[in-house]
Length: 244
Image 1 (cartoon, helix red, strand yellow):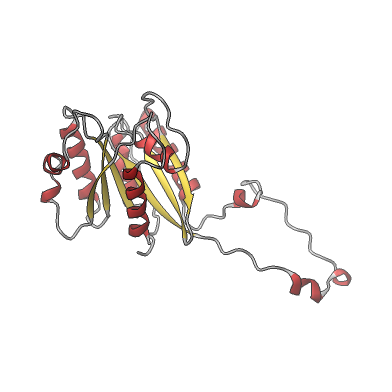
Image 2 (spheres, rainbow, N blue to C red; image 1 turned 180 degrees about the vertical axis):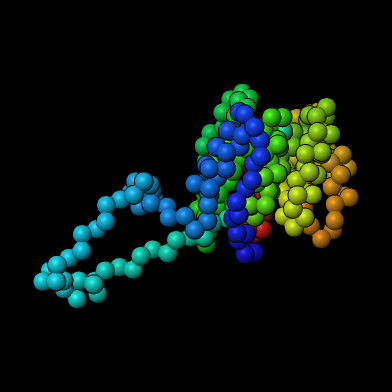
């Protein structure tokens, strides 16, 4: 699948909301923008490095150029947007994928979290935006800028499932071609809804058959094992397949 070109985002808000939206946009473009010159990967300051001194004519030796190794080819980037209501397990999902131990307790994300994972053929950039009500407005501004959407749902949160469904379908309407992976998290809890219930309650059966939509079970618990959790492994393998 060819990478999607990044375009400018337009956030027309006032007051503090505009500030937050602008910060999110600037950080996205700085960290995830395609075609960026990532000087920090080469140990140089992002604000510019001194130009290398050119050798004088009498210092130049053609044999020295033959011994120089070719520059390493920069890997292509793929962008994955990770969304879901607060408390669904988005931050834990990112920590698990990056090999970090999950944090104990529920710590809501104010702003965003990001992870970059290298693979053999490309780098995967995952961006999580907080799921609180005042941050959901910004979700749709990023949907058209990514290659895959991961939407995390708390399978045991029956009360707020209608809200999750509403937000999910808003995103689906924003980009009809974007592949979507719905993660039914916390399936290990006794009060968790079954996959059949979630498919019905989230309205996944009514989605156009032309769209790639996947519903995967997971138990990404803060106190559980890390990447060994089978659901996380399946999600990662599916992401790699969709991004290839």
